[in-house]
Length: 95
Image (cartoon, rainbow, N blue to C red; front, side, top):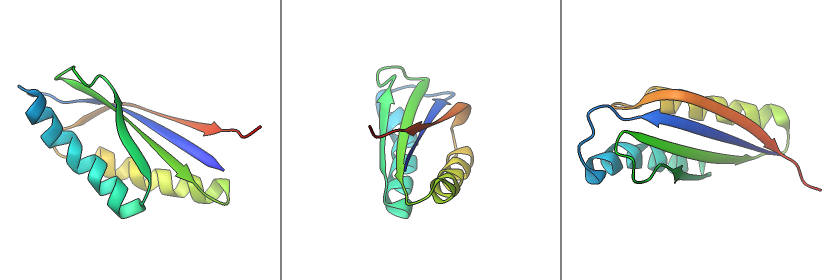
């Protein structure tokens, strides 16, 4: 089972791409190191005030995948200097 999460974020007061990276990098690193998952900024890289991060969770059951993504969502919501605009979840199906 693969569950993906997409986080659309606002970064108020960001004045440079360096400042933006300083806010996004801790989130990406924390998710990667704490949960050992694939995570990346995937959209709006050149937009100072916005960022989109996606995460992929591979698990043996839907319940476990959901539980892991719930924890990641709490981590993102608690990040300093970042406002969550929206969170989307979607299952990736294997054919």
